[in-house]
Length: 502
Ligand SMILES: Nc1ncnc2c1ncn2[C@@H]1O[C@H](COP(=O)(O)OP(=O)(O)OP(=O)(O)O)[C@@H](O)[C@H]1O
Ligand SMILES: [Mg+2]
Image (tube, rainbow, N blue to C red):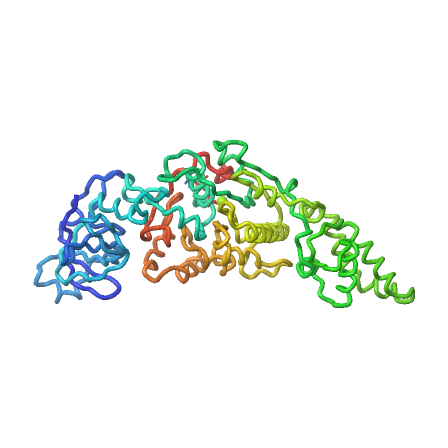
């Protein structure tokens, strides 16, 4: 049902203002979510335009004009007048049942404003989906539990997306809910044939191992950090020098000679496996081979830092997955007909950064050479831990940023989940075309998001700090317009529940 709620008395290019009837808030209507007050903050309105179309808007601010506005209101003899500020979001065509963002015609001063019918709101959410195209239910409208908030899955999963929110607000559950919608029969993915999407989750908190248990066991691979294999064979000479924190040309000369010898090649970047444990001994041999005995000790002295660093990696079992293997678990997975790879990589941030770098490099190189293969989704959980903006670590964000910038061409898409969006590589975040934002309270993060999103969505930022667990502002290309959704239940939920202390 639709009710008249007032008339436009002020209009500008940013918003319109409406004077409400004085009985506006005494008309609760029943919705799927219990009783709803008409014309309340964040509710939707419809304004008839001259050509039988409807302008659709959202109330984003309300106030009672004080007595200093007497001039305007005296003649009305209304004491309890309420003014609503409305942001217009688009145009609805009731004949074609189609919604489009933006307005070609502005409503006129004095035009009547109505509450939006539930059916119309449903059709508006649906308008992001083309005829017979796949649709993904993300959740329900916050005020209307029966109305689904839908995403275009080809846009959401095909053009990178991010999930932000303070700790415990629902990010990992949102990732799980979306993956369950895609891979398990939850009825939330419609008009889609069986998916060929592959997904790799960098599960830095070891939360996801049970989340997709309903999926055929042949399709899932779970690898812990102890069993992960991503060989140093893939690192170029330059990348190795970054890792070893060595830039002295005199020292690098012996490192290069030793690697060439171990690889039995004349191209130091050739992807040939060699035993990393033999590298310190080989560097010493090269020093001895290329110099006379008087110089040995002196040269061994200034190569000492390099040798110590290599031995440090060799004696630290956390790096076994990088330096003791010729295998590559990521390539094995990409070549297999498995669909889901869960990498439980609970380890220190500096190790994680190297692992993430190697994973992104492997994916980028592999998909560039195998472009006809299935699409791949790379989920970067807790991304602030290993792709930070001010990355001063030994290895940088080069490949993850390359995947973010160019990956789409090769069918690689990323999902960045983080509680500190402003700390994550801005290049990566700026490539995300859709956002799901749970409650965030840090001013710097909110400002960062404000500057990332489109101008017309910025009013919505104020809502983010008041969201409850599982609620999120959804916006960007995959959604018809920015709105607050209650995300569909994840079942099972990821393991790390909010701890109970008492
Ligand atoms: N979509 C959902 N379905 C079911 N439960 C949810 C959902 N969203 C949030 N919850 C509840 O909220 C709790 C916290 O969610 P979650 O673990 O996803 O938070 P988070 O944002 O990933 O936190 P952290 O930053 O600490 O990883 C869950 O344990 C669950 O009880
Ligand atoms: Mg989480």
